[in-house]
Image (cartoon, rainbow, N blue to C red):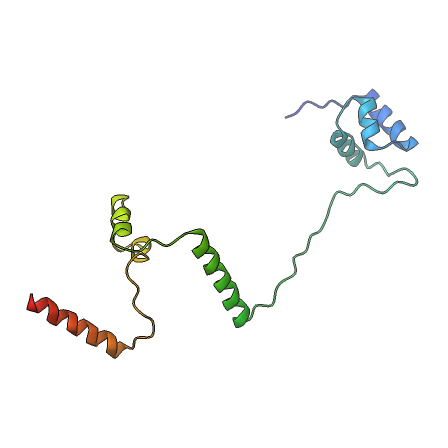
Length: 143
């Protein structure tokens, strides 16, 4: 716990100077403490501001306005985020990138590793994917 530097004499001087209308900085110079210490002591004493001075503001209320979330708005925010991530982290594709990840300890099932695998075109149907798989099986069997 901090040692209280406010003696009875300092408190009396503080009240007198504050009542005369001096600022907290000026009172702090006279008493030999910081401006924050003066304001804290005045707050604890419940001292009213002298005539013509603004009251001490201790509590401020900040409100955050909620944004209207729509599907279009959410999609736009996701697009901006993905573009930002893509610009910040250049994508390394290929076997070398996958080997480097494995050397660092990533598993072949991790999301980081799979992100570097060749991408399958999204516009393929299930039938086309099955046909491609069947062709791969035939090619493997021919070896």
